Image (cartoon, rainbow, N blue to C red; front, side):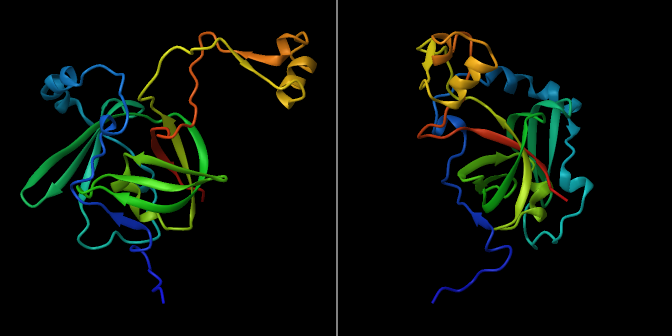
Amino acid sequence: MSIEKSWPDDTFVWEDENQEHYCGSHWEVFFDSPDEILQSLPEIIPDLVHLPTFGGFYTGPRESPAGRATGAQLCWPNIHQGFVVTLRVTEGSIEFMNMSPFQTSGIQVDVEVRHVHVWASGAEARIEGVWGESPIAFHDYAYIGNRTWYEAGKRCEFILTGIACRAGPPKVDKLPLASDSRLAEWQRTWAELTEEQATFIGLEGSRIFFLSRTGIVMTTGFADRR
């Protein structure tokens, strides 16, 4: 007979230190080397500012469990986009845990939270849930500030921003459409395209996220539906 778990055990999954999470452990990254940013870190640190989080403005329905990591998220060059720095506070020290890109603008979506995979540091996490009928997982750079809002089975609204880890120009310049598809019909009727033009979508100059076997890398901001 299975034993029902209660919060926080039904929501949070605690990962060990052997679990890798940097993008390069799963995807072929295309951005430049981080060496330049790391070399500039001593100059950036004095200009870091506190990153506002939803949980910082609105107290969650639960208290943070005793013994959980404490810390903060700082950002540079501003609170809208740039880099977010995750710090963990331990007895007698403040530890630098991670530095990752972020952007607060994105699409706001309704996600049912299934699990929150807390990284070994205790200061970062990956949200696993369901968006519509599709499973989804994304990095939560504001986990410490928002964690008391998360509960398995509850719906929250997140602002998702996709960050490509592998990108390039399209290998085809046209995406064919079935002649009886709704999009083809829309192109004929409302876009006033010819019958030939309505049977494809032009991809020249486009950048499109497609769901793949490795998934899509996403970061998140949090906006609870109140």
